[in-house]
Image (cartoon, rainbow, N blue to C red; front, side):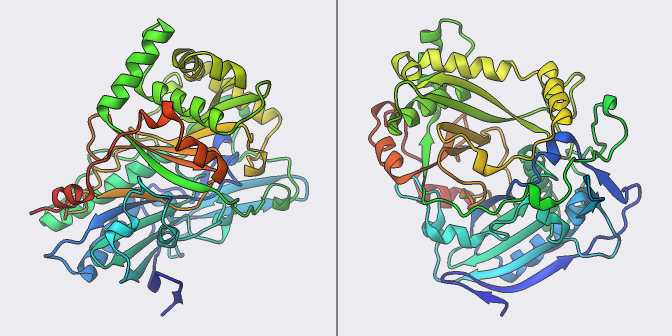
Length: 464
């Protein structure tokens, strides 16, 4: 028995060694937007499943382990390690693939007293403490990929369900690539269950994109030692809550925002983001003359000219933002805030991306959580990610979940709602006082909807 904590017992850890793959390079180079994430914590995302009556946990685990091994033939960068070279004045980082070396890991765990209801979507309560124990690599940052796996999966046997939690190095893959990986893994598992050969419906594109004006990679960072950019932060005391927004509620917000801004260009996401920005600003009781910032992790693939493939593998994101005075954001209507968000997103085009790369190359900055604007709201993840399509052969997920990584006051994550049709779930992290105020905010809470009942989801999620 490898380790024990309050709820979860880890019973086994398996290395999935990297085997030589034809045409796979020995070294993979990183782009500027990837190198900027050297200090970012691993992404921790997971899916909760009902336990099928016709499969034992051992059978489920072996299915997931075997299909993961095959999936890594397609997503082979997850099998490598970071190679860091310092010459006393500069540092450069590459991803190295060594045949026969330790690659990804998959962990088998048990939490026999924990139920699906204990960890299912936390709409009426704060995030359950046990959820943190269902993810590996707490506190790991991207740079740790030089000595830790770039992908670790923990499969936990609950009393009436199965939780699959992944920790993935965000330098290697962003949300788009991560959910491409998840869905490909599920596709291969379903084929195994059905006893058929698989052909990935969305083949991975591995060729790295570099602006050719910067010369040949690797990019050398003007850093003499990793200690200059690595920080280990202890998460502050925050409350974490999940809120559901039905298709009808989203449609009402969108119609209101478009009517108030009179331009008709506000999307569903922009309308919801603007309500959240206004409501959290109000909940924080900031001075009227202070500034507040809306920040969004936004992908570059479709915005470059020519665009990259949606199946381009890697981390290809930047942050776009809108800024307003506290009195402005609260005195104007929803449409005014939505238009700020709309314009910030529209401004993130090929020219903007190239300018950001030029600026970064002139003055490379490694992002740190400690530099996060305390008056900001920051949205990551996205409602377009196909989370509930991840059926490994016994039914779709009951709910999603996330670990402790990158969480602090003002950090939000947006997910698709379980029922689809444009519904959304919003995960909110705030200081306790601000969360208490948000739960009393009329504009925000009047938009929040009742989620689909857990029993209904459980009944619908198993293949009969």
